[in-house]
Image (tube, rainbow, N blue to C red; front, side):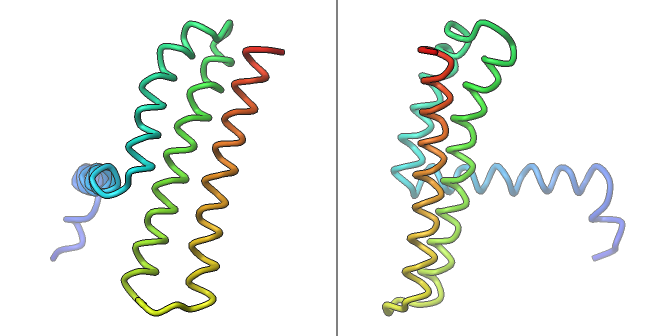
Length: 120
């Protein structure tokens, strides 16, 4: 393959395609991601209704999108760990636990942002 095939517009098109495939795979294979997409679908209109300023709306929406991003990364970690070893290994378990912790923290972060903007 020539170097110029991976530059410019074609590189952007390929990156967008691979990103879409990643989102699609996560949606198809991860129940938690589907639940979080539903949460985002509910959060979008709520953010526009509850947020008083553009900044508040952006914070409300980005906190939920952040959960999706972390969930995708967690799913990727789990897929790699599962691919390279079916037997229990301390490091594999630790990696999966850390990914799960990241998702939990992103959910906590979103909850704190929503509470602060709605209640405080």
